[in-house]
Length: 431
Length: 173
Image (cartoon, rainbow over all chains, first blue to last red; front, side, top):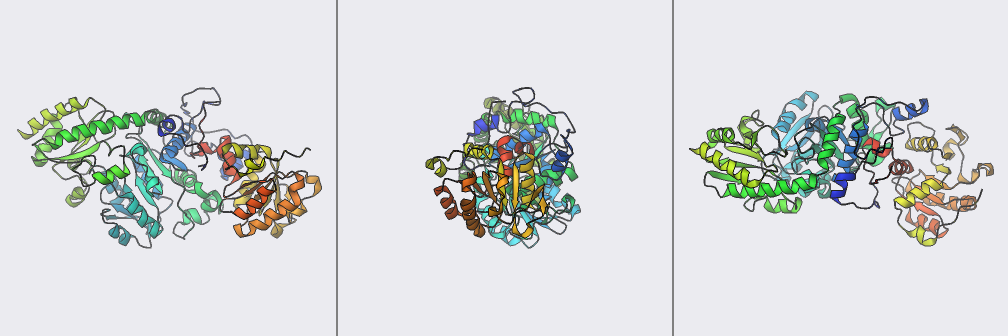
């Protein structure tokens, strides 16, 4: 927020940002404020809170002290001005789009997305009158051409799930800048430790905090982080932020709150009316996870590289798509945008096709067959038969979830044990 | 009332860091707000109301609304019209476009320098480096393109309740 604030290192921020000793008790760890409503000092205080003239707690659907700590921590780690937490990553995506979109509007999105997001964008948001236009983001010219008068945002993932693909954020950001729409980046797979989308021109970041941020597979959650850099009043495209808001007596959010407008809208209108609030307990678990994020990500990345390199030289494997491998067409881009590593999620194709994939998943003993990623445990999924099952074959292919592809989320176990497990399962799958 | 000590010239040229902002906000008691609007939906009203809640006296200055009452104060036509009985005015907050800031700075230096003026603050989007230099040459600190409400909330605790990045880390109670 302040240009002159001391620039703390990532490791310091992941432990301290947003948190302070509890003013009531001195408790050093952030308490779980398992509480719904907050007492007003007097009528004036209540009025100021309801009019958004003062920041404070009213009701935990909007803000909660434990959730607030997580919000500030995420904003600090991403280098943004503020954040709004949500009950899940999917909720965060709706919450991110809600201030921007109205019926008849569209969002231009990458074809390389998590399958659940593709489904949310290609079917569910239509019921709000919103449309997603899917484009190959390796062709920025096509992205630019897809943007029309009713386009309100451009959306992609920094490191895509599951394709081993890294989006060329600076080029897509340049398109967004030229077209006067914000670039929203899902930074779940990379985490702010590996990639900081705001430094590459993104305006808004969304997260599923369920993954690496909480880290242990314990708590659902999502977050929307705002860079504070987009000028919502430069055009009349974003009336929720630039025009009078009827539910607040005609207040104009951007004019009144400047760079804080989008985040404040997320709480004061988004969470107030959509209600996808993060639970305080989940915020607490996520905060605990984030305290060791950098340490875990370093190990996740090292393990992923070791396992990917092993798979790549195995004759039973057709190909490995991991941007951390020199063989990847995205290797150089990953080095530039994610210098500390290309994540720990990748896919590999089996020569045995769909059937071999199903057998492999069944034969693994350490890898867990679950629809999740970013756990301390190594996870495996056959996307084509699970998370990407609702997609057409073309969508599956574009998203890196072809029928002969298995996705791995590499955990923090001993990588040699993971390799042994894959080895025995590959033998069973291909026999 | 005593006249506050004039900051050393080098302190005036130093960047406005968090320590300087804390000092400015703690050092002010009365703030003249130029461009204050009695319209409850205007950002200036938000800021005035907030600063009043925090214990500051806010003197509204706005020729277009002079004579009307706002938050218990009569709106004044100019900085020069602040009555002597209002006492010292440590800070002027400018809620006008940048092109008008220079004249307001000059009026503040002319009329309030002898009345304890220490800081001239220009709101988000308001900047006039030449006028700021004139103020610093007279021993008055300047803040540009910021909001005292946001900075007060950021430095003294409430902003983080809204999920905002305050940049503040402290292990103290």
